[in-house]
Length: 211
Image (cartoon, rainbow, N blue to C red):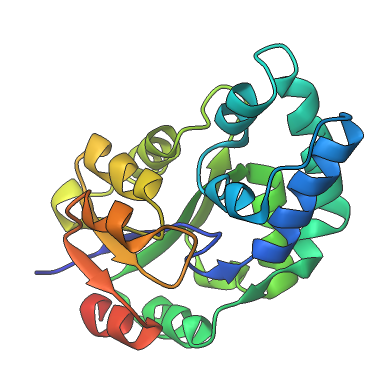
């Protein structure tokens, strides 16, 4: 199997951003005067688009305000609380050196914030493109399809690497292979339920599949 176009999720796959994301949700609920959910509940918010989470947890009408509060916090403080998982930078470096492979980021994170985070972490140079959510298209399948179309990626040689069921569902929706990583935010049982093409437990295992 030859994989030429590799689409990486960001949070929970390349980057441990759990502290900043958690603090962003706490700040948002506090600012809205709502009870702050438990840590366990907040962890379930890591993966889906913000718009979807806040429509469910706040209200249809209050979701837009909640998203703005969250992003204001995350842009100024939250993204600075993130770091790469051990071993990930080496994987990205090696993949970026391979002339037969192109790597991208496809995240449900707001695109300008995703670009800023990658700059802050020093990984922008490895990617052919960094794609995030926009107001009109925030589901993972939407982000993936835009990246695939703009780069004329052959679906038979394309794969998404992600840590939640939303990444895997997005990949299946657009018709590409899926790789689940177990070190992120998604529970293993929910990942396995989506029948990923591969499951990897370490960045080294991921490299062995992608190289």
